Image 1 (cartoon, helix red, strand yellow):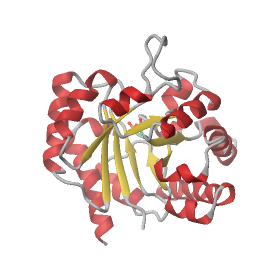
Image 2: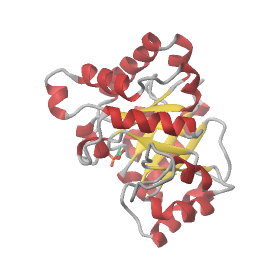
Image 3: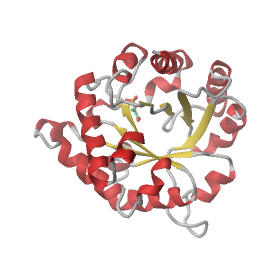
Image 4: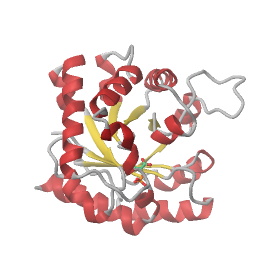
Length: 257
Ligand code: PEP
């Protein structure tokens, strides 16, 4: 049985004060670890320590939205994995579509980061997903194959305890458009079979595959109830406790069924 993961990607949002209030609301709603549902927030770098201090001791973990692949040194503006683990961060989102498409990260860049983050002991949430034009031209599976192959190049099966995949169709991110539960399930099934073919049935069965793309309280339960959907990576709705908490609750309810 895979444990649901509900992760909030705050992107480049909040102030120190509004982020702290949000974290406090979440920490009091999720006071302790739920064996069936893992909850994570990924605030902007400058607020990681503040948010980390607030959620420490609660059932909410904290992670970063990016990292660099080199050890600490002369890399102006970058953040080393050593710095993330130093402040108690346990996870990092890599390959998010905004980093791929706005900041022009390639699969090779992402792969270097994936390997460095794994070495550092971080949980890696590797995001993959197709553009609208790619879906319309029936390229979804080819894109997922390229991004999985590139992002995970040289990654050993032994690392999969630390790896989570997030399927995030780019056309559904921040647009209000959501993949239908059937579209999400089909992509997740493709990814699970990819893991089976490239690694093993055990790894495919144990690896969590999150859905991301305009997840909201009113669509969370239907998406999360798909057989191969093991949680959600939530952007916009993770910025409001009154929206994020019902998504967590949907996962808690489903895990009790
Ligand atoms: C995201 O940024 O990963 C995301 C899924 O955003 P949103 O929920 O706003 O679509």
